[in-house]
Image (cartoon, rainbow, N blue to C red; front, side, top):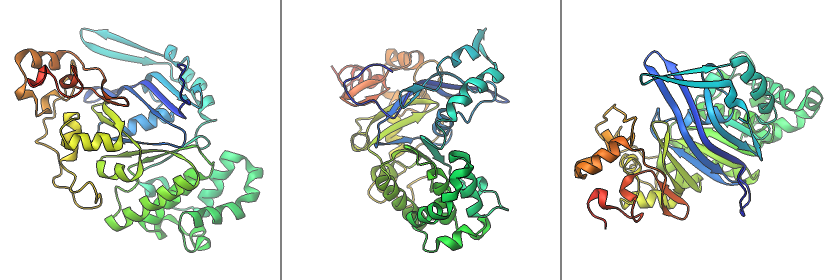
Length: 377
C-alpha cells in the first residue's frame, strides 16, 4: 500500500473489478471501485439496486469465486493485499468489441482462500439483508452460535460458549437470552432474526462489520430499533462499519463518509454531511441529487419515500463515457461538445474539497461548476 503520513486504513480497496458472463451478456458488476474504511471509522456505500454495492462487499470477502468472478484490483486488509498475485489467474481478451474472461478457478481458490481464512469472521464480518434465508431452519440459535464459535476459535474454545453466548445476546438487547438460545428461526420475529445474524457476525470479534441493507425487510419501528442497537454495538466494541444502503437518509445517522455507486462505478465520495448537503444545494453528482429526491425527510429516515424511483428511468447505460449520461437531467443543458465528451470520455474523480470527489465533467474547472454546463469560466 502506498506510503502515507496518515494512519493506514483498516480496509483499502483499489481498482476492484468483478466481471461476469450472463444470459443477458457481459456484466461489469464492479468496475474500478476504490475507497478506504479507517480503523474505527464508518463508511456508507449508497446507490440503487443493481449498482454494485453488494457485489463490492462480496468481492472484498471473497464470496464470489466462480468463473469469472473477481478479475483484478487490490483489497488491502490490515496491510495485506488479499488479491496479491491473483491477477495471473485471470485473463481478459477483446475480440471485435466482445470481452471474454478466463479464470483458473482451482488455482484462484488455493491462493485466495488461504488468505481469507485469516480474515473472514475474524477481521471482517458481514450481515446480510435476509436473515431468515441465512439461518438453518432446523437448528436453534444456540447451535448456530456454537458452530460459528467452533469454526473461528476451534473446538476447545467452545468451552466458553455458555458464558459468551448469553452475554452477547444481552448486548444485542435480548431480554431473555436463554429463551432465544433454544429458539428456532421460525420462532423469531424479523428484528430478532436480524439481531441473531449480527451476533453470529460478532462471534469472532472482528475489526470491521459490513452491514448489507440490514433493515430492508423490517417495518419502520423495528428498523429504528435495529439501527439504534447496531450503532450502540459498533460504538461499544470500537468497530469499523461499512453500511450498504439505498437510503441516503440512514447514512446521516450511522456513518462519517459516503461512497455513491452507479452501474458498478464510484461516482462520488466524501464526508456524509458534505455529500448530502452539497447535493441538496446542487453541488454534487446528478445521480446523488436524484437519489435524494426520493427521500421524504433527511432528518426522519423512517418515513415513506416521495417516489419509488428518482426519475423516469432510462435503462440504457453509457459504457464509453459517463455511465449516467442517458439518465442525467443536465444533458439537455450541455453544448454539443459537452455531450460528446460525456458520451465518449469517462470522467475522473474530480476534487470538490479536500476529501470530496465527484466523477462528473461539470466540475472539471473549479469544483463548483464548469464551462461544460455553461455557467463556469
